[in-house]
Image (cartoon, rainbow, N blue to C red):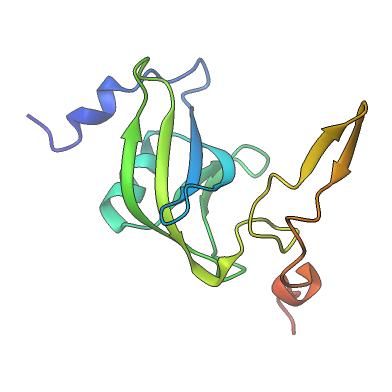
Length: 135
């Protein structure tokens, strides 16, 4: 029996991906949503840091590879339908979103319009997080 037999229990979608919800372990706050393929999930479990599948770049995305805002994985959960993964993480630097916020969920539907919430301020200017490679 392979050490990754648990991967065969995941109900991957038609593109070979599974949705992943990432939550701050200490507070329960939802930080982000992303996708994983089998390699990303296996690497996450093996290395202990979140690795996702970037659909736009079509490659593994090591969370924090550019920003330094890695996600140390404390627990990995699987839903009852076997088609969603939940990661409980320790978010390095307190920023999960590429906009410089703690959470990617900073817009709320109010009176038929999406509005930024004051509860999710920009912690760090993204221009300071994502510098061009030449700098």
